[in-house]
Length: 140
Image (cartoon, rainbow, N blue to C red):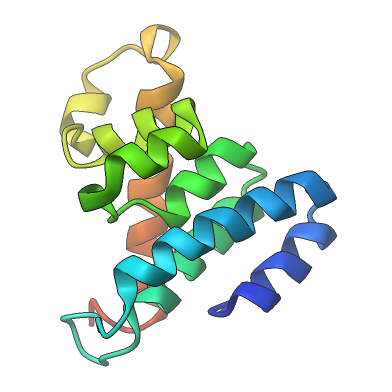
């Protein structure tokens, strides 16, 4: 599992993300790092919360997600710093802002052709979040 910013940035390069996009990831990482300071996952095994956020972002990269979705994956739990996230990027802000408001069940009721980019990004992050919890053995 990828759980450090250096590993994430190296992985981003192998997946075709540009240097500019990698810098965008690093800027988001600063916000995620401040939010995660001293926090651990509440499930067993306990691990630094930042590792979870980085891992979710890496999982999204494996799917070829756009950079806004990847960055929103890195920030998906940072609901307490929305002005800063919106200042970083409007689309990322909208995705993170909607992360806790859109459930998988709600998205399933929306015809795919009618789903917005934000709704699709949120469901991708929710799925990556679940995959990370499985890989980290948090759901066993």
